[in-house]
Every structure is written in structure tokens, then in C-alpha cells.
Image (cartoon, rainbow, N blue to C red):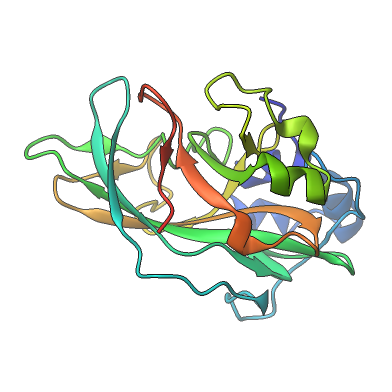
Length: 232
């Protein structure tokens, strides 16, 4: 997996106080990387004044989310429910408000992950890898037809886990973890008690504004015979 500047910045969650000492010009240079596939303008990063909410440019409506059971190679099992993918002008990640350039958006979605083990505390590394700041086993995926329309055909057929008809557009950059309700910045992994749930906000981009969120699905790709569609 290619490790982008924005992915590196995602790994800085929990040490935002250090970032305050760095000049804004350096932060923009180090943390302004764009999409792994698009060649659009670089987003800008600014310190949010107080608000932590994102400003939405469009939101996709869909049926109520369904819960999907997944497990990883270690035997950890989870029940996952995801919100519809939305396109937003800003994402609040790593104590910074990231702004897309004109004509571009970020894609974002919220996962509710429940530990279905009856006795074991499980870590959320599949969904929130603190080393990289990415959700390493969750992908934003579009059909090959939609990928061709928006200029992401190069992501089709690259990952052998996906059939040629499905294209993981987040391949290379990965999905950034903007927030995790179970991450309290005091451990090397994010633990989840039996029966407990965590809400994890993911984002990707910037992407062209022509990118329709309704065409994007979320897949879990670890430990299964084939990637599992988590989308409502």
C-alpha cells in the first residue's frame, strides 16, 4: 500500500499539540496530499476555530443501514453497520479542518462496529490502524462502469481479491480514520469489549466533484473468501 502524506498525518492522532508548533506553511506541504488516483488540486489544511462538524456539499439518502457479520484471520468477529457515503467539502481529521479545492469533494462514511465475541476483548486494527491512521481493511468501491466515467479505471483489476467488475477506488491511499469513539489515545491498539460498539468516521479524497456518492459501496476485505459488501 502506498503511504501518502495525508495517511501519515492520520497517524498523528493524539499528538495534535505538537502540530501547533509547526508553521502552517509546513503543515500544508506535509499533509496536503490528494487522492491516490485523481490529479486534482491539493486540499488546504487549516486549524478549526471551534466547530468539529463537517460542511456537506451533498448527502446521499438510502434505506436504513443493515448489519453485516465479518471476521478476520485471527478469529475476531464483528457486526458492522455503515451509513450512506456522503460527499463533503471539509473533513475534520487529526485536529485539522481539511478543505477540498474548487470542483472537488471528500467522500465520508460512518461505521458502527460491534464486538460479537461473548468473552474476548478484540482490537479494532482491521478498522482503525493506529500505526498508519488508516482503516486498512475497508475500501470504497465502485463498479467498473462508474470507474470509467469518473476516470478511475486504473483501479480496476489491480487487487486480485476483487473481480474486474468492482474497483476499489481507495486503493493506494486507503481510507483515513477521522474519528473513533473507542480510541482514547492511551494505548497502542483500540480495544473493544464483548458486546461493545464503536463509531468510526472514515474519509477519502479529495475526488472530483462529479464523483457520485450513491455509486460508492463499502467493502471489508480481510479474512473472507471474498470481500464483503457492507453497504445498506
